[in-house]
Length: 373
Image: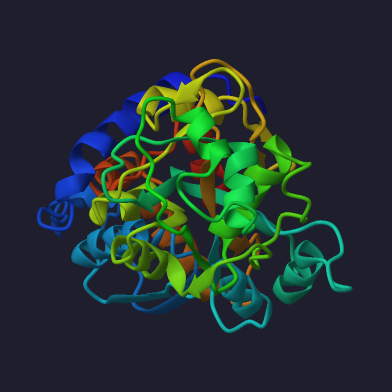
């Protein structure tokens, strides 16, 4: 599937995210109406009673919290527990049958790593095919905190050297060459990275590896392989950067905005690009479906040189069984994800710094959710 329409639609969606997310924590999206289903996308007939457990991606924490609130407002007897432990931990718990679905910022691996294949292990755990269902979309910011520097341009090579400890001060000639006319201090660079296994880390390192392979020679992975100081989860790296003059990190847009951190413009070869709705949409538009049928894993072109494209974006997947061994669990997962993927809930996420699923993707996700049993 070539997601050809995502650019325009994603741009519109992200525009609302950028405009509204700054006040999201003070002004959460309105709760759903129990009588009408409101923003939940759930009706009384869809509601389940009992518990549903999931964990994983921190990138989608605010989004899934909003989806849970909307669902539980409409379905008072449902208890949905999502723990933002990181994508790697979520997948491990799913494979260990400790949670009913997992959130991950990268699709299940189909190639061996440490002698294991995630997709195969997940299928064995399910007793049926495991599906990657894209549910939350958004860009990754390179966020920084340098006194007196309100505008910063980086490219993949310089970013790779910063995050690998090869460039150590903010007035380094390589940074200065990209920021002519900007007074850069001699402040030491302090890199903060995700210490937990993270899909955000994997997507960021996919960008570095694809766009600057000679500077970032490590294989993309959920576990950080560069330099710096580790902090747990997205909130951890964002908070640490905010509190450190000279700090820099990679983090989802919503966390950068919530912490009022400036974000670098990225030059992928066609000039500096600010993180804007249109710019992120141009990169998302290059995504291709790599899964088959209802497995909706996508591949993003992080090395795109399209003019005006912001190249560092991610998709968070819900990892599910196509057919659950326990039919009641399957019904619960189906009911909640039907609500989560609904147009109403997706639109409500814009106030939290996320973008609704583009129409072409949303239609396929909704069809796949309906096929869960």
